[in-house]
Image (cartoon, rainbow, N blue to C red):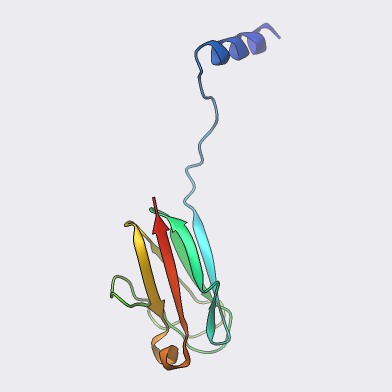
Length: 111
């Protein structure tokens, strides 16, 4: 009991933060359903990762409009691709085979 009171007193007097910071990377999921990305727009922070998961039996890919990232074809249900965003900004992307059908999305990256 004395040790607990001592820890409380020290953390209070010296404003010590004893919280444990997670070292696990943050991964945001974008589902590929039918001929769309869900969600179509996602907000993340720099250093975070987006994982696209194909939930269809159709072939899809993820292609950045500015060519900063591009996946191989995701042929089967369950295939996935992930990319870690290191810079702030907006990244528009689309599925190359289905671009004409409006299959596109956007990742907004903030600090």
